[in-house]
Image (cartoon, rainbow, N blue to C red; front, top):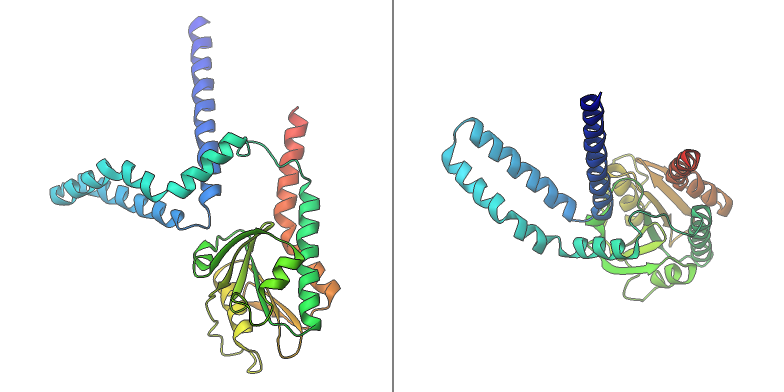
Length: 271
């Protein structure tokens, strides 16, 4: 009985240990998702695979090179991942890695949608051209790197001011992540779809282009007509009213919120 109880305790301890490690890794991946650091992680994975293959097939030269890369890799990772590591440590110090925000997620989503709709409606009435891309599941940090970093809190006033004509940032796209305007004056890939209407300009082609390679939601305000359009998954909806735009944003941006609420209810049931 003693041995059986000891074995059960060991298995439980190992299970908890593995679960905690995976949880911490998951949180770290969430922090660096959408940044160039994720591409570096893929490179590290490739190096490890090559190292294992060199051992399997006894490729001594490649094995020596990969051994050196792994030997010095820890120092290189610290240097390359400095911004991400600093951000992770700051969040750990604030306790925000393992705790939820005190603000209601529903309220944050509502304020975000209100800011975007108010800004787009204002610009549409005055025929101010705008291109707004909202990150969802797929990280679009590489496209944010092509523009000017803002990292400002999303407000109707700031978003409208960015697209005001003859200002330094009015050309290009604004990228939004959550309630943060990440960057402005960003370059998006242009769609090569031959079926796009010839009357649509560069903004609409850029909106279609980003929707073909990511799951991002992109809003376009036409400078010529003042019409509002929205693209997602290679499809475009045109001439949206204020209420239609609000419904599109709510239906697409509330999916992650529902998942968070489900997890919260599960945690509440366990208590």
